[in-house]
Amino acid sequence: MAIKYIDRKEIDTEKWDACIASHPETASLFAETSYLDACCEQWSALVQDDYQAVMPLPWKKKAYIYYVYPPFFLPRLGLYGKEIPAGELPEWINAIPSYFKWIDKVLNISIPENPYLYRKHKTYRLDLSLPYEEIQQGYHQNHKRNCRKANENGLKMVNNFPCEEVINLFRNKNAKTYKAGYTAKDYRQLPHLLQVLQEKQQLEMWGVLDSKDTLCAGAFFPFDEGKYYFLFSGRNTESNTNKAMFFLIDQFIRHHAGQNKILDFNGSNHPDIAKFYAGFGAEAMNYDEIHVSRFRPLEKLGFNLYTKLNRLK
Image (cartoon, rainbow, N blue to C red; front, side, top):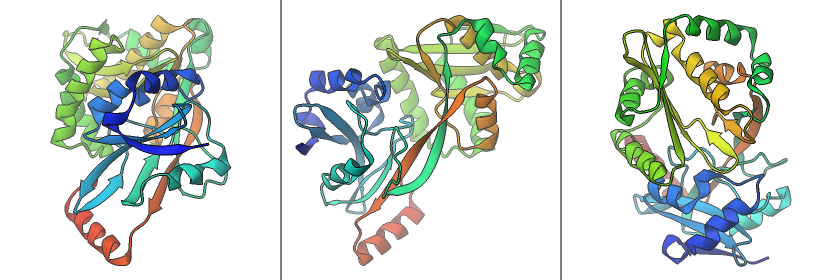
């Protein structure tokens, strides 16, 4: 097995995207070249042989130090084209050039006895292949009750609205509640990413209008051959009462039930958000975040000082 490091400009886009799609268990929209290009200022990759397997590496350079990092709107980036055996992970990590002094990477799976494990994360996935009535039977009782309340509040679905409205809903409420950590630059980047997805016909936008025809909640769902991804959402304060997000997710499930796809909620470690996702009958799946430090003592001191003054990501 030969693993080589290559820059973005050297990557064969056709072979890369074919590799991503070749293994259904790991295939993901997030690892396609167009999505990576839209999300990352710079990214390189590890490639095994003739694109038998690949690993994207988003990176930055700060204070003269190169580091690998997990960008916003890219929830997981691991190995694609095959599942990585536990004993093979060091070989991939060692193939990352030594001038990358810090590696913070969120994988797409959980690896037993992972030698680089920093912490485990959870996502929640819902199988949409069943009829809606069967999926609904798996809702928690509180979710069933909230969905009934939502249906009594005169809410309406809408799919045609400016994406900035949902982003502003998030900034005005959710960002403060959950301490999301997005910068102004991240908020500017998101519409560009959504435009790329729309041009590729890989995006659904779902919004909820209240009884006064005001957008009170919305969400963006990119999708690929096998999954829908709950990428980003926003809601106003009134949604706490009218249950708009329960309505939105329930209507999305109702619309897509019977399709051979998975709804991937993309997290979360926050207990309230995790409870919301699990309440629709979604099953938890673990994945690993790894940290690798290659700093010499003075480098680490300088980097730590820099990151106290500037946000790393």
